[in-house]
Length: 340
Image (cartoon, rainbow, N blue to C red):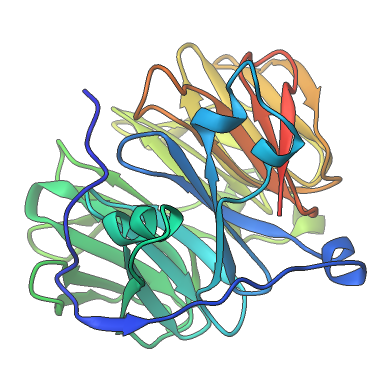
C-alpha cells in the first residue's frame, strides 16, 4: 500500500539549509554513503561525504519526457558538518546519522520546501559517532549502533533512550531486525554478529564469522560490514566472505566468491543483490553461485536500495565513489544516473 508523504515532526527546531553547489575537485572526490526512499516512494534521498542530503524526484526522472535536469536534485541541503553515514525513513521523517549526531527531518516539510513553501524542520536526537540505524516498528523504536561499541534503543515518540545493549568490543557497522522473532542483529569491527532479544536486551547468540574456515579471509580482516536478514536466513560479510546462514542452526550454508569486501547486500526474490569494492552489482543465487555482475558508474560501491514503497516507481538505485547514483528499472542493466 502506498503511504502519503505527510505528517509533522515531534520536534520543533527550525533550521534553514542553503543550497550548496559542488563543482570540480569536490565532485571528483564525492562519495555517496547512504540512500532512502520517501514513504510514498516518489522521492529518493541520498547522502554524501560532504554532509549533504540531496532529494531527487523519481516521478520526473522516470518520465518519458525526462531531461538532463530531471536527473538533478530538486533540493540539496547541508545536514551535518561531516559525512552522512546513514539515512533511514520512517512514516513521517527522514533520519540522518553523521559525525556525532542523528537528525530528524520532516518529510512533509522537505516536500513543502521543494514546492517553495516553508523551511526544513530538523531536530538533533543524540550525540555519538554513528554509522548504522534501523527501526523496530512494533514499538516505534530507533536502533542505533556506532563508535562506543554499544547499541542504543530510543523511543521515537518520546525522544528518550530505553536501553543500551552491551557486548561488542569494537564499533558497530551494521544492524538488522527480525520483527516477528523480536530480535536485533548487529555486526561489528570485532568480527562478531550478535543476536539480541529485544525484550530482555540480552545477547542470546554470538557468531564469530571469521573463525569459520570457509568464511575467513585474514588478508581482509575480521570486521563485519554488511548484515541483513529474511525470515530464518542471514547474510553477512566484510573481511570474511559474504555468506548465507541458517539462523536456527547458526551455520553457514553458502559462501559467495566475490572479490574485496561487500558493503551492502539484500535478498530479492530468489536472489541476493550485493555491492562493495568494485564497480558492479552482483546477482547471486542462494546456493552460492554468482549469476551476473552488472557494471555501474562508480568504481567502488557503498549502497544499494530497492524502492518497495511505490509500484509505479519501483527501481534499484546504487551509489558509491562518485557523484552519480545509478538507477536500474530492470536489474539487468543501468537505465540512467542521477547526479548531485
